Length: 357
Image (tube, rainbow, N blue to C red; front, side, top):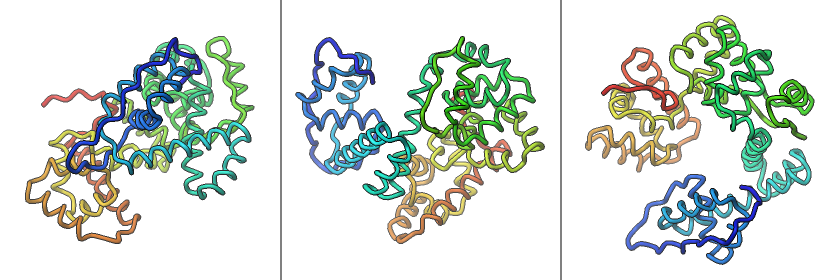
């Protein structure tokens, strides 16, 4: 959000009134969390905050406030705590850099929470420094990069949305596709010196690319997101050649292209199909660590009797190790990917697949 003041404070809806009866715990999106913070501030302070936001942001967050409904006190407290931690993290990074921030946050919250907070902030730093890349359409981005070296293309694409990166990769010749995908996957961080070189080469086409800290870019998880947005023909072509060139990397990318939580994106028939091949014990274990959306998706696609049986088993299954839950989820993902290879179910690829019922 920019610091340009709006013309006048906008009206902030009052906090929703708690409904009667029991209200289930809500899983909030980022936009809903922002709305919860606005509501917690109260109308007067929230209106003051609105003065430092772009009109578009004011409109969006006001809409989220209006749609939010009741949020229980426990959820609100969690959101405010997360907001405080992120504010503290941004302040520490701005004042002293990443290493200083890590030391401060580890002392305040412990090493695990500190790492999670820094990961979020470094991603936001990356997006902020390279926001201009996302303003260019796919064709313009490809036109600017098509004659660059694969290493340069890999670095630049590490700073754009996976869908846009996929569109550029799709236009490259087969050999360069493999080199760019491999370059993104093997990239851990971008040093200021490397970024300055890219800036010099691209200065006529892009805005300034500068950073004072190494920021995590690329990596296997990112390239998996890119591959998820490619059409199936391009994906298969790249994997076929990458498997010959670097079989271990190809396997690692495949493993990360579909995760257990992605079940919510599957059509009902596909869910019904893989459930038939899963061990019921694995379903119970997997759901112990799943969010409500995944659980509801599975319950909606099994018989009433089976759903009740799973719920009963979930109630009596206690003291489960996280690694056992993750192993069960991975076995289910393995079943799904095996069935997809046999064309017995469909995994949606970045919302691009056309489905005929």
